[in-house]
Amino acid sequence: MSKTVPEGWAIHPLNDKVDILSGFPFKSSLFCDDPSKMGIIRIRDLAKQSVETFYAGDFDDAYVIRKGDILVGMDGDFNIVKWKTKSALLNQRICKVKASRSGGFDSDFLFYSLVDDLDSIHSATGATTVKHLSVKDIKGIEKAYPPLSEQKKIAAILSSVDEVIEKTRAQIDKLKDLKTGMMQELLTKGIGSGGVPHTEFKDSSVGKIPVSWESYLLGDVFDLKNGVNKDKDAFGHGVPIISYKNVYVGGGILDSDLGALVEMNEKELSRFRVHFGDVFFTRTSETPDEIGFSNVYLGRRDDVVFNGFVIRARQKNDLFHPHFLKYVFQSNAVRKQMMDNSKFTTRAGISGESLGRIAIAVPDIPEQKNIANALDSVEARITKTINKINTIQSFKKAMMQDLLTGKVRVNVNSRELSNV
Image (cartoon, helix red, strand yellow):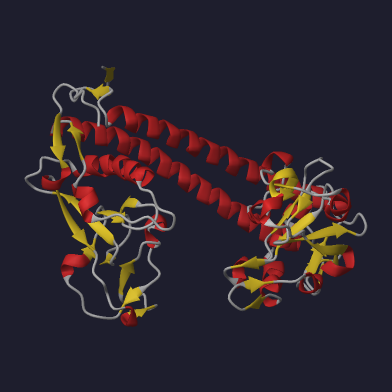
């Protein structure tokens, strides 16, 4: 902690400024999926601000969390949120932090101050597995705090930035919904020729499709091959390798996306070399609904290989435009086939043989290009908006550092900031 205290600020322990309520160990035997019951907040629910587990037993009203309450996850990343949705129960390993009535703390300021404090505690906590936070850790925070009037002004400034972030997130959600709707429409009904929609349709193994389209089994139009498996000491040097993550994120794989390296001899490189337009599928996942995610290599290197957690599909002929391949496997009909053809033990898995049985609908190359261009346009808007929100979040982080340390002071009687 810096020995320099901004003028008008005072060093206080957080202990006598806050009230902390630890979550209750509700009986897991009474957990249910009945939404008519009171929801129960678990650590995994903090980030998404919604609950998926409900409680069928009795409870003390003291553990009911309401909109605006400050919650801290005590394990993992020490997530801290202001609860935004409907009331729910405070489960164990989460605590509610509230500014005490006599503490002289603004609740919104307390939230932003704790965000900064918990990030520092997390960074300083050494752990090889899951990190743990205690109530004592929170109460033990001691640093310089501004007077209440300045706290309120700082909180108002940061809240205004958060409003911009939330509005931008809403824009991203709308664009993603638009893209999803467009994909389902374009990958089944097409885009037509010259802006004229298709009017005649036929039955196929993937449902009704335009009469000019064809349907194929994936194994009839692609050669399928599993990736390379190597010992751990072969990684970290050598040639670029397409990883599970590269495939899972979708959107096309560029050379700039390739961060992993693996040592390969010439014979191995020849067997597992990646070509422009090769498609990759994830072989395993935690749940069946995430099996068989796909992506396409759009880079130009001739020394890229792919790992054993993915399956490569290479065209047997030139039926597909590479950019169309980013989307064709994402229609509802194809995704359902992926799940139906997967096997589940401890993890969901799909084989090249199972992939080969999946049917896909294929328009001609010009229409493929038009479909890909339409979806690429929406994807570009999504990327642009995500970049915007990343910029705002970086700005907010820098602003928090300045305002919460007093490096930049606020004038409580105006909208201006002043450097000190």
